[in-house]
Image 1 (cartoon, rainbow, N blue to C red):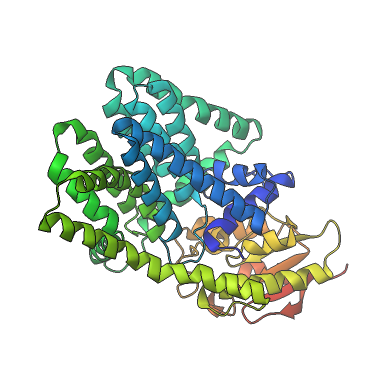
Image 2: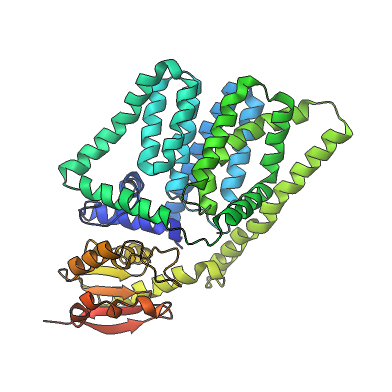
Length: 454
């Protein structure tokens, strides 16, 4: 199974393996390193992809272990790494927490602050630069590193510049840098300015309170740390936490995956807090706090832990999974099967909607720069199943005219059934172009078209 947060980057990595340049040949609204990493591991899926995920999470926990151990002791290192591993398994509603920009960034994020704490501004800057190539919110890590390595500020800036200069040089040499600026930054700003949330302040409060409650085990332990040892020595942890919370707030959406940026400083403080709690003489207060942490940790375990068992049982018994989180993935796989049954070498594909997993399951090359409908309608995927308001109307119209110059073999339309108002035939620029295609198959949520034989 695949998950929507990873599909986009995995599919972009596969297109890179097909010889496509991000931004120039394939619309991609995220920094390039996400797709390049997936390309580097061969665009794999299935159990090899989950093995990669596990190893990446292990690396994240390893850096956190070293960080907490060097700041305090072995016990804090084990606690911090263990807490981080726990919540990277039982943090989101999915049975599998996929690796996307927010989670990809966590490894260089923690490494950057750790290296800055060790007084290595150049290395910390390089880690910040790598993090920025995963997620633009890495900019909020830089002030923390500056605070920890102020005399080495020039070296920090130099380090940040190096990986970005290399990446931008690659894009510039391929004629893709201008498209990178438009797709990552211009689209990103338009997206951030047009939040679909009707009451941002209430949404921010509700989701943050929910996150704090669900992560109460580390929040309570971190609070104990600040109560017992909140000296000025650890002012940098407070700054790190505050800047991470600001990064979560950017765009006013407060998506659950955004809180991955807040988890490292909370976990670091919690590792120390647990140690202080255990080392304190037994009292009623200590026992109460410790019991609260244990009970709080049981909540995410009970809430999301059974999902792993249910999936494992289905796999052992060889039966289809029956739960809502997998409906789109199952429909995409069915649509991909219909395409694969009709495809020939050299055939190409575009997808109207947002189902990049179709490209993973078919391994077909994109037949246009625009391989999903977001840049063609201007309606982001987080609202296009119900809404129709375009955040880039003129730009989207230009993109539709450019689309008519392409001749993909297949079109998988996974949006019209859910939201007929965004059907491609509703756009005047596309009507004549669509006459070259005929319906060859359908699933419960998707329509499959193939180009008519000349």
